[in-house]
Image (cartoon, rainbow, N blue to C red; front, side, top):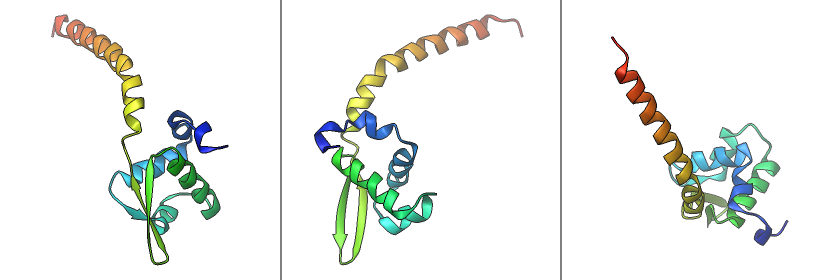
Amino acid sequence: MHSTDTTVYEVLAEPNRRRILDLLREGERPVTDLLNELPIAQPTVSKHLKLLRQAGLVSVRQDAQRRFYQLRAAPLAEVDEWLEPYREHWRGRLDRLESHLDSLPE
């Protein structure tokens, strides 16, 4: 699969890739830290990191023999924008539920 074929949505569909992004929310981390936090083998982590890089969701910095990964949240703006109508849907439903609960006798 070429980088142009991989969408942010496809990349986010895989739970281990989402876990990597969750770990990187805390800040830049060396790949060894990621390996220690994930229940998968090093070659698989490397493949996930490659797809995350291709989608623009992470950046990598090399320091001697170590690679450090950092979250790049900008591509998630597209996902956030897509989710907004769903948030509005749930806000409306939750507002109606709150009104209903407020109208019940105590």
